[in-house]
Image 1 (cartoon, rainbow over the protein chains, first blue to last red):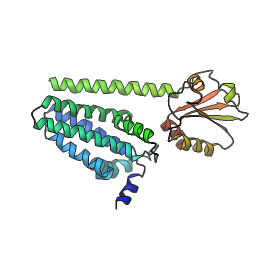
Image 2: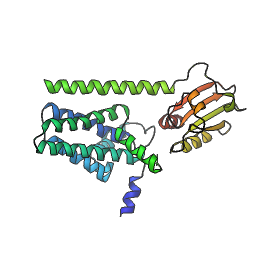
Image 3: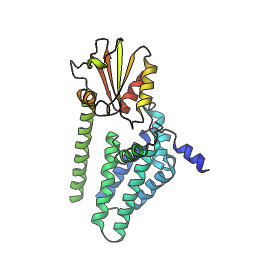
Image 4: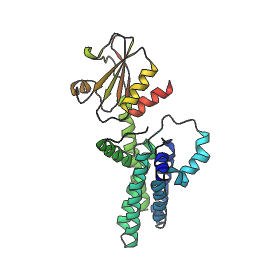
Length: 150
Length: 125
């Protein structure tokens, strides 16, 4: 079972799926901050955590993209290794979990700073394709000499 | 109101970083007029691909293979930037792989910097 999921995780992915997810995350976190919707932060942490733990298929946003948007677009210009984006989602989840804990212990200032860092990096990734978490994974991969699948 | 200003400031910052990154990427792909391969990289072929690589570059070999498939008659010249930093510097290489396409006289006619630019070029063909 573990072997099957490991193989599945190494299938190159359409990078526009994670970018849609990043755009959604940036907008949702900005709206949460604007209207002080604190419960939205742990909810987004769960969504992003699912994507990090079980891959793009576990993300409702990426599933919506695959079902509704992708059929209307042309094929992607290139495919990407799925692991960097997954690592970036894991780092984003950690930040959002830390933000949720900060809300719980009564430090809303710190909580919003952590959430807005995720929002800014997600917006940057959605707009330019520059994914800071992915770059960290790629640096680590280069250091460990991991081979990329795309 | 303060929150709106914070979100606006964040948007402006992200927008500025995005713009700077796109401008840098465009500059990396631009061929400067009158740019020619150094004599030691020129080959006796109608088209020469110089593929600048680094030892840890995962996408350099697939990029070179793609170029070989694209035009088997072209000369393919691999250049390890860590072995010849002087040449990499002279050719203004900032990403691996960087592919320089030169004509029969060694004039550079195309510059593809980074794996995405190379793969996008291969996919268009």
